[in-house]
Length: 202
Image 1 (cartoon, helix red, strand yellow):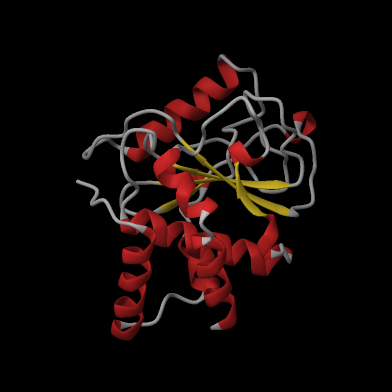
Image 2 (spheres, rainbow, N blue to C red):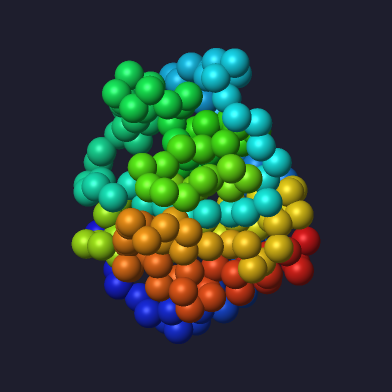
């Protein structure tokens, strides 16, 4: 079960974990991402896509409960089918999905703009979804660490400045996404600070 932590407590945890062992190299983070064919997904039709150049990193949550033991692979397959058949989108709206264990899965091809149910245009945004409803639960440390690793990898690869690391609700007045318990890590600068540390250590 996720353990509630304040930003200060999470930062203290980081200091102790840093002493225990270095974070993975950003190249290793990218190599560890579970590719679409590996979870049973199918490629999108590029004729339907909007090509983009990444210049923002934007955090989302699933917005629904994701209990322990739920299969993330089946979730991704269902999400891809729903996105295409019900929403008539190109693909899963997010480029990356992070499960309860901090494992990162590829979703929509990063070269294609994502989709949203709200009014902002996600063109140019690398979209990260963390499973769970963070209006109701706390993110766990594995998820927080995975968000930092992924954001740092994307920031380095696409030269995204720290001030362009934000969340869905920073661009839309129609949502509370990524939920209050995850949003405070954005609002209080936790992710930008941790990403800056990761980039400086490379």
